[in-house]
Image (cartoon, rainbow, N blue to C red; front, side, top):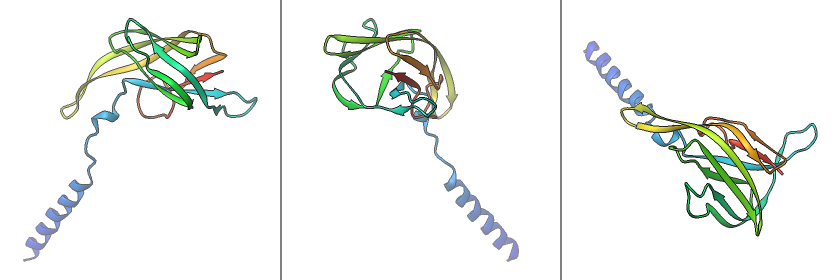
Length: 155
């Protein structure tokens, strides 16, 4: 009888532990975009997110035919897509006829994650090639959900 009780407790414990195992979330692995935030710099202090507005935001016309955003009012961060089969991209932030650009280089690899998730594009921002802003800083090169903002733009 005692061995039956021990077996029952082991089976019950195994079922309990298996219910605690987190299901695989394949969407959390790698992103097909990065998040850019607009900041104001304060001397000697942590930069603060600032609210901006644009009439349109465009990505490289050879990759995207339509604007990414139109008539944007009062946003602090933007999700900017990358094309995994390219290695450079330019974004244009326009206020009516006045536009500012940022050009990035990046690296893409098609990697196998797991049996459940299959393969995904892993994209890493390499560097800022050029820009028309006060400064642009890549704070997280890998496009993952580990940080709220991948790129800081100072205006």
